[in-house]
Every structure is written in C-alpha cells, then in structure tokens.
Length: 78
Image 1 (tube, rainbow, N blue to C red):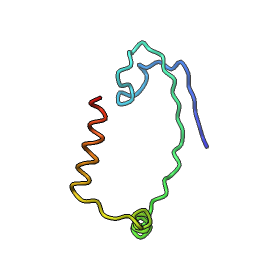
Image 2: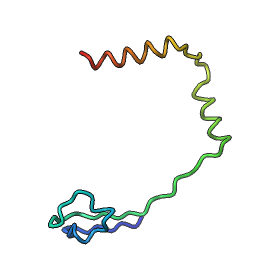
Image 3: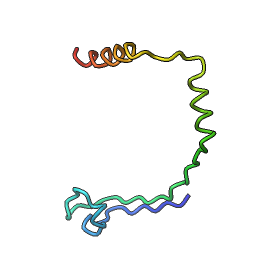
Image 4: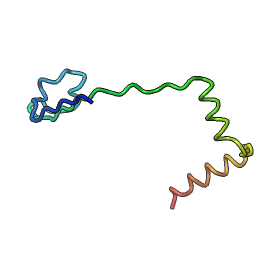
C-alpha cells in the first residue's frame, strides 16, 4: 500500500478545505494513504445477510420497543 508521511508541514500550505481550524502558523503531520476499494454487496447478498440475522427471531411489538428505549434512556438519569 502506498503511504506518504510529511511531518512539520506548514498548515498555511494546506488546501482551504483541509485546513479546518488549524492556526496558519501551526505545523501539521500529513499522512496520505491510498484507500482500498470497498467491496459492494449485491441486493441478493444483502437480503441474504438480513434474512440470516433475523432467522429465529420473533418480531418486536411497539410496546416492547418503547420499553427498551425507555430503559436505555433511564440508564442516563442515574
């Protein structure tokens, strides 16, 4: 995999969309790596994965879903 590392690079030389909130007088470390292409699933593969994940599970009622959400929310109140 190709990788380029440049340390102590002046932030002022970065393209505007990459500069963000860096001070123009700051030094930054720039790392550039080639991304590996992601493998896209076909519709059939995706539906097969969903079916496999849901196999043997019963549907959840609205009341059960609301109870779960309230329980999770109440954990933060303590």
